[in-house]
Image: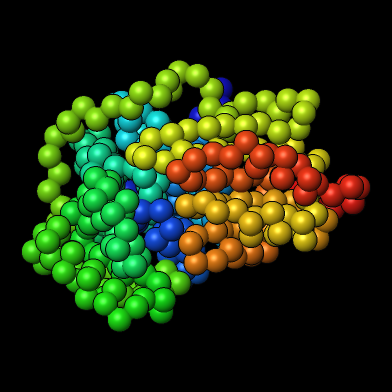
Length: 346
């Protein structure tokens, strides 16, 4: 009888772990992409991404930028705040990601409308203490948002600042004369004594900002619940119907989202697509699209629409967050389909 095959993969040690949070459009994904660019050679990094909508897009955007050496592992938890009842969606995704990646560092990006305190509580739970070394929590803030009561008075926005070890005033290059000082005053009102405040643009962070343990006080979970039924399949998991696209909607925290997954056989005309996306008047939009020219990622904030060429994606996806949903958006997207499918394939 032959001896059993030993698992030669490295064991999971205490993995340095950072939460990178912030409200809608603060630049969380850009910050993570910049950190991945400066990942030490030979290290495996893992990224756990949570999205408000059921159509996961961030994972495709991050993976499309990831290095070709296969040392970056991505896992998504779509469908709203991942800290919902018993933190089961997050815990399952976390366990699977750690088992697959055996990472040297873990970055966690909660949705901008999620509850980072509950995420921190899950990470500090007894069953995670043998595997995770929770380090600094970074909260990205666009200081211009402090002039908008929807941000300044939003419970989640305030919680994101209250638990931060480091406040990152991002997009500083776009600030007005008073924005920097307003963030300094606001952070002193909400944050713990000793919370660091730094300023940057394009999410460019020094690797050293990740180091050392969090100082946030983590109390026992308070039984935070969501009304969403997690027993049904998310749009992320549904089979593709004959029409060639899946629609999903979500709402909460004062916002609504709608998203679509499209069959990879559906290719989009890039010029028409850019014209449609530029015309959107929404709080947030992220997308990846397969076009005759290749795969492109799109990111819309209140400042601009950006387009980035990506290495690959499985299918075209888009997620829109707004204070209301317009029924004509799907017609506009379908009008952007290319007339003929070229030889390009994913």
